[in-house]
Length: 65
Length: 175
Ligand code: FES
Image (cartoon, rainbow over all chains, first blue to last red; front, side, top):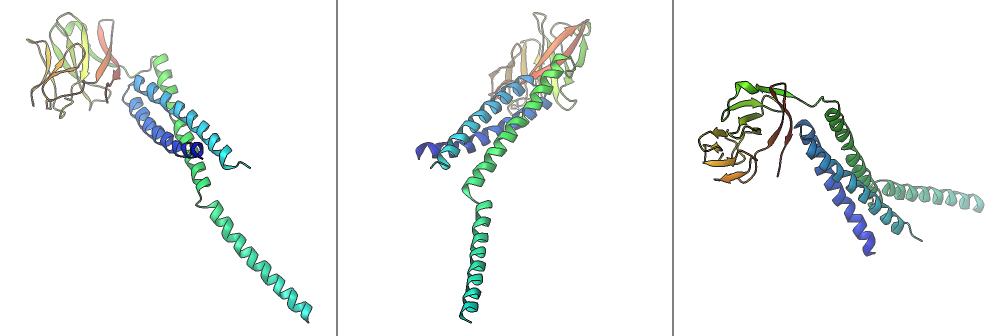
């Protein structure tokens, strides 16, 4: 039960991280700051991966039986 | 007669079942926890992947040299200890180019990180000064030295080529 809840709520956390990252990537891109683009792009990809893991954990628990 | 009545009752029952079925399904497809989480997950993935084109384009433009290059000055036009204003990345983003006493070129966006007054180069003390509230910045790295500003000035990356100084990028530290 605990695992499922954590997985459930962590997806919203990763969603928030991705929103912030996307806005930073866009600002970095138009502000000619390649460093900022790469940093936040990596952050977004990592958090997307974690979100996928969390989603599969949640799905496994949710549809168990 | 009784048969007919029975039949009638059965169809009525079935109609009722259909009605309930419908209600449940609507609830199921619409606002429920599972669908909500799935939609959120989908949005997370979509937004996360939306960052990659920017990374790719940014990489491509630095590879093929199509970075936004702005010619700022001729090396010989700017003596040691002099400064010049320009705009980068757009004309509306004020910036300052300084040729430091040890003959290096440095450039920063010169909006003060306190309340956005323009920052000037003070030749005698070799320092960047914001006159509004006496904010001082280090010329070599843009760090605040004294006064109200807490954050560094955004640094502009330079390239000196064929006797000309170009701005080729920007580095904003600490937002
Ligand atoms: S605006 Fe520069 S010190 Fe206040």
